[in-house]
Amino acid sequence: MDKVRETLRVRKERAVLVGAVAGRSKEQDNLEELTALAKSAGAVVVDKFQQKLRSINPALYVGKGKAEQLAGRVRRFRADVVIFDNDLLPRQIRELERIIEIKVIDRSELILDIFATRAKTRQAKLQVELAQLEYTYPRLTRMWSHLDTVVGAGGATAAGAVGGIGTRGPGEQQLEIDRRLVNKRIGELKGELERIDRRRVREIDGRKGLFKICLVGYTNAGKSTLLNALTDADVLVEDRLFATLDTRTRKWALGGGKEVLLSDTIGFIKNLPHQLVASFRATLEEAINADLLLHIVDVSSSEALKQIESVNSVLAEIGCGRRPRLLVLNKVDVVGAVGTLEMLATVYNEAVCISARTGSGLDELRDAVLAQYKGAELVLRVTASQSNGKVQSFLRAYAAVLDERYSDGQVLIEARLGRNQLADLKRLRPESIEVIRSQDSTP
Image 1 (tube, rainbow, N blue to C red):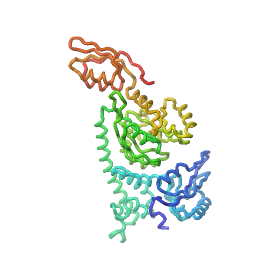
Image 2: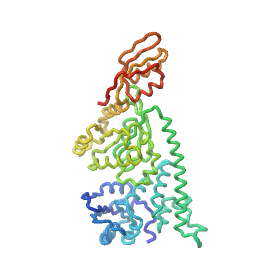
Image 3: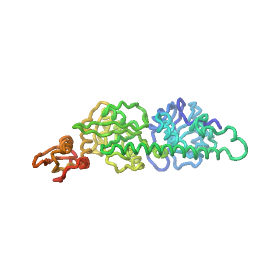
Image 4: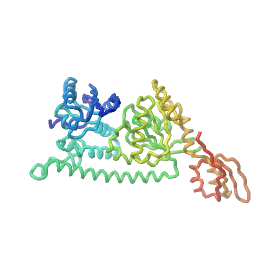
């Protein structure tokens, strides 16, 4: 049995999926999302096993009889791995593996594995390694080969070197050595990520004066496709979960000389492992500091409403639940999306309907963002020296000029300007700014 958990990877393995709903919940997990996750990890799904539980078994999560029944199906389908759509305790995994006699992993472990295969930049790799180690730490008992795969598989890291000369004699137990080394590595990773985080904060601070928009949404909702459609960013687009992990920022021209910064982020998912939320906080800094969030929703999914709730939950967890946001209903061109679209458009009547793939609705999205960019409109009376050409140029570029008069070396301009742009006007140091009236510019 020591060979059961040599790796948490599931690439090219035959997988049996298990969904267990506990308590009085009437909801039945159809394992659709777990199937997509397993396929994204490279597994071949050979069977699905669903169970309604009266209560969770402390030792096995499911009952002993069901565990033995599951073992029989594993043998019948010659499976290599069992994947639970639940988070399991270390002792539950251990007891299940004794009965089933193959590797058992839970939902969080599967998502961590997918993130490990998607990480390309150094920052993403460090974030994934940290999340894996924090997940693995309480599971170290009888799982050394499992940890060895996570952190280096052959000594590529300090933790991977355990087991050599000086570690096999009397003294500390192997588990104590494992935990000490894991703790040390976790500290190193956190320190390096903090340095990266400080650099990213400086980058974001350097964008002051620019309106920042961040794309957020459930994984595979079409955020990268939309970023490409709006900015010609040429970002990787694939029809799979968590296709991209790294934040990308591009300029988006709204027209009339107005430009904003548009950033993509990693996709969210229900029950996203909290280790990942914490580790990817630096990547999510774009959302935390955004002036506007564009929440992209896949209306072709029958779970769209639940996905909206999951995204809102993660946004609240990272501290930007109160950020201004605009709901964008994407994939309206997909056959079968009509019913969900009608329901969501009724519930969220200010949402914008688009197809990032075909370009439908992108003009309406631009207009809605422009209204948010401007904020409530103000009618201003601005007095400036005629020699201060910057004030005049700014108002002609960003405001609707209503009246303009020259007298005694001064220019008096009445203009309609968005409230959010008032600070930019003040930085140009006109002699005076008087607010004549305010009106809502939102359509």
